[in-house]
Length: 306
Ligand code: SAM
Image 1 (cartoon, helix red, strand yellow):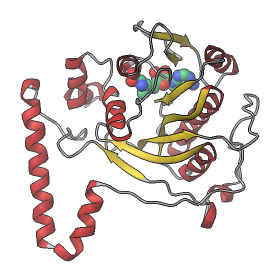
Image 2 (cartoon, helix red, strand yellow):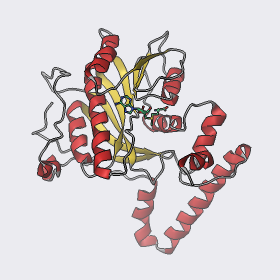
Image 3 (cartoon, protein in one colour):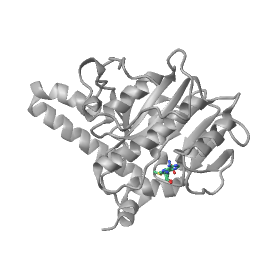
């Protein structure tokens, strides 16, 4: 069965159609906001890799800015216009695009930068992860130019082999970094979102577009960070059990969906409870982990600088 027909069965795809969102991805940003209050106090935002524009729709509706340009949306592809959203068509890894975005925020920085960028996947995991990391780093580089101190950066990541290096890099610039998986993001997908709060670049840091933040021609041993240089960021799932499961199929009758969602949640809860009762001593910590997995570590990576 082709990808399109799977997408059409998908409950978030149908809910997006029903609610006028341009893509099911809208729910990812909405669920991230539910968990992290991303839009609180935000008046200016950048949406990188924005087409077809559902994140820009969410931003333009949820944030308090006024007039055209309080949201700047950038993508390789053209997008249909949206109220309050200024569009830039370009490649975020290109200097010319980065400069155009930065220019817009000179003297009036942004509170939030989001990036849902995804390369065309090749199926070769290493290549796909590398391409994804490049997009994220390009987005981070732009964020270092446009974010106000204390600002927030949210970007899609692939939780692959080298992801700890990316976390280390993000921690250089943000006081809090964690990895979040919204319920609308399929479990079968390697994608998650780095949620970085409190933009706080190292003292003396001067953003420089000509220098990449991270050189990916690194030594692979260096990549396998260990001991105090290994950063394990908190992993948080967003959306409670009553939210639709993006990996399940639901009936086509969308009007019945809310009931089905609650029923599905209830069935799932009762299954978890039964399991816990049966194997109680072992299951208490396991059940906790079922609802929320959170691993804390605050080790810094002293040799990683901008
Ligand atoms: N957040 C969007 C929404 O809600 O509608 C969906 C984004 S879609 C998953 C990924 C987008 O990344 C595609 O539109 C693609 O054109 C864009 N993209 C990929 N590489 C890019 C690059 N180098 N520069 C700009 N956009 C890029």
